[in-house]
Amino acid sequence: MRLISYIFPIYNEADNIALLHKTVTEVVKPLKKKYEFEFIYINDGSKDDSLKELEKLHKKDSSAVIVDLARNFGHQIAVTAGLDVAKGDAVIIMDSDMQDPPKVSLELIERWEEGYDVVYAQRRSRKDTVFKRATANLFYRTLHSLAEIDIPRNTGDFRLIDRKVVEEVRRYTEHNRFLRGMISNVGFRQTGVLFDRDERHAGETGYPLRKMLKFAADGIMSFSSAPLRLISRLGYIMSFLSVIFIVYTLSVRLFYPTHAVEGWAFIVISIFLVGGIQLIMLGVLGSYIGRIYTETQNRPLYSIRNILRSKK
Ligand code: UDP
Ligand code: MG
Image (spheres, rainbow, N blue to C red):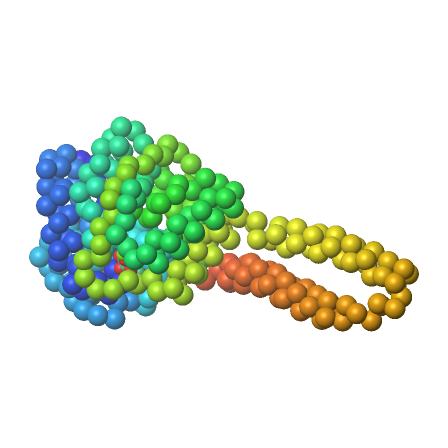
């Protein structure tokens, strides 16, 4: 029988775990004759009682596999750990806060049966704050116009991926990970299904603004060198403008010598303007160099403290 693995990254989800597990196991019940299931919970250094809840779950249900990471490594790394541990012929990645409705995973499995290797769940609507929706929208637009590959819009990590694709993604060893980009980059046959994203059931978001910005930068910088090209483009524009200014200044000197001292304000403004642009551009360079640095250190992506898995 073929095995399907569910991967749930867990960061402070104590009040969601029991409901989540109950809901998915209910949802997959009709498929039990056709497939085996394993449910992999990766505890990403939760500070609440999540680990206790997970251990309880494992005692009750042997199909629940618990991976306890040594500290909080971040959502993308937690999912990566899940991909390494999962044994399924297909792997389904889902959020653990009930925002990704478990019943949608059945549609993902159906499309997989039709022969697709990646089936991503695309949001038709979402019930997040105005701020989250606006920033997400801006991010997907920017990514879409900058990225060198086509990354589907309004799509999180909620998706099913076939074993073949899991093995390919596991060969991506980069540290600043943007999984949905990596999965698009792999290729194979990919398709999407639409769904309505729910509200978070309990607890609060594990993605404060700081993490969101880092994640957005990872997405854009892993799949685009457009920010770097922007530097030289701005450089050209500035040089072109300065030629015009030189011509202007010379003409004032030659034809209106009495006016020549004016323009002091102009000089000061241009110094600040150019200085500002240079600093921003240094920042762009710095972000890439910082990422190159972490990649060359090539540290292990994560450390596992413990795995609870019933042997079969
Ligand atoms: N998460 C994680 N590590 C983190 C932050 C989040 O494993 O450092 C998990 C979290 O438990 C959830 C998923 O990643 O299952 C998505 O996080 P969240 O719902 O907080 O993000 P949002 O939906 O607000 O963007
Ligand atoms: Mg959420």
